[in-house]
Length: 233
Image (cartoon, rainbow, N blue to C red):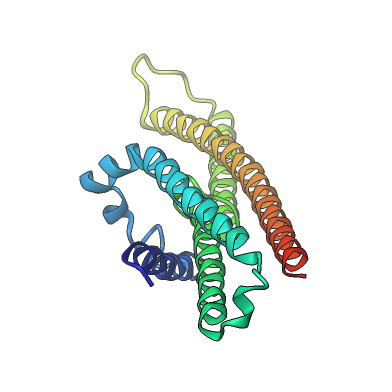
């Protein structure tokens, strides 16, 4: 294996490791929050899309080179079959071309998978799932408790029938604070619901895109296999 294809194969192994980390959700976004918000990674994330498309372009070039080699060595010369050394050398080159095709193809496929998993793993405000439902239930319970306190305070004020002083009393101040707290909790609850709906729609679109890319890759692989079999026959 040449140096270039050794580097691509090493890159494929690194991609497999990264996919395993993202699937196992390690490190978790809450545990590695400070790490993911570091200045160095923030600088890299601004250029991440450019680096990704550049790397994808290079891998596609190597994939096309591997396909060209496969097409080149798929044609068997009848005169060359009479010599054992020439036939073995031809078969070895065809095997290397097929190996390079699979290495570059899987590297491209895992690059797309990593990009999809990384977006779903580290996107901010991921309130989808049990954590989001817990936050929403906490906000609803706090809102209900504040409303009950407000209603109880109004009943006590009506039962007391006290004259309204010129300066606000401590009860009025606490009632105003409770009203502000209720308004804040309601706005926070509405924001949580909007974030949850947005994340749910993003997650569904990412799943559809992942399924589409997987189907396209399998179709391309079947076409290459059929074309190589037809030419070998």
